[in-house]
Image 1 (cartoon, helix red, strand yellow):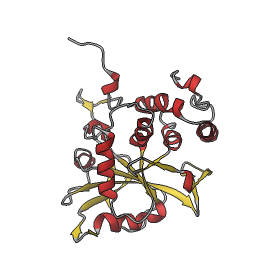
Image 2 (cartoon, helix red, strand yellow; image 1 turned 180 degrees about the horizontal axis):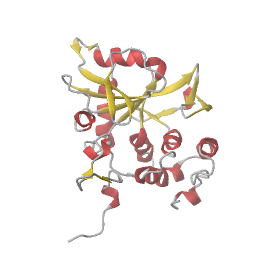
Image 3 (spheres, rainbow, N blue to C red; image 1 turned 30 degrees about the vertical axis):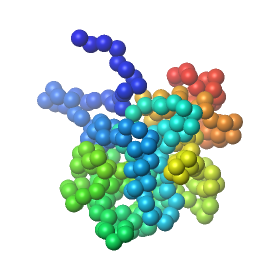
Length: 258
């Protein structure tokens, strides 16, 4: 017997396409469908800090977990998460490769690294400078496997890494380079010392797709933004997505769905 769905337990909502044989095609490049995410913010912080231990350049937890880390300060959880996303600066991509493929305390860090050249298509990355059209890397620990999405998203060590654009001391939104912010204002730090992207920056990225999980993140976090963050997000969304329903993220509107 079917009953009401507990939305708090939903990782993702995905529209499935019917294949010619009458079966549904499961998109294997959607990490949330693998349900391999950490259960708590403590687990996420521990895993992120372990993966980035010794990395000598700026990095931040990104995406849904970054918003979750902000929400914890306001004493509430938002939703489960299917993957862990890390943001680094594009200019530091070689430092990232050397970190994940180099030695730490005498032990080789055996990460397999692949560039996401387009949706669902991976290519092994050997550390060569990536073109500006590639802004996402997938990583997993262990011996190299064929670069297929399902090999990564079912791996409990799986990480997504995003390359952030930067111009000297200015971060630039890759979809609208005219949108900039001082690099020093891009992130925050948890009480444990874990860096994460500020929620207004994450919401700007999420505004493009308006998926089920993105709307949940907005509804939960918009009321917690201070006046400066709300003003920045409003201006940024109006610039990047004119007419977007999130363009006025005030607490009074945050709880209404578009």
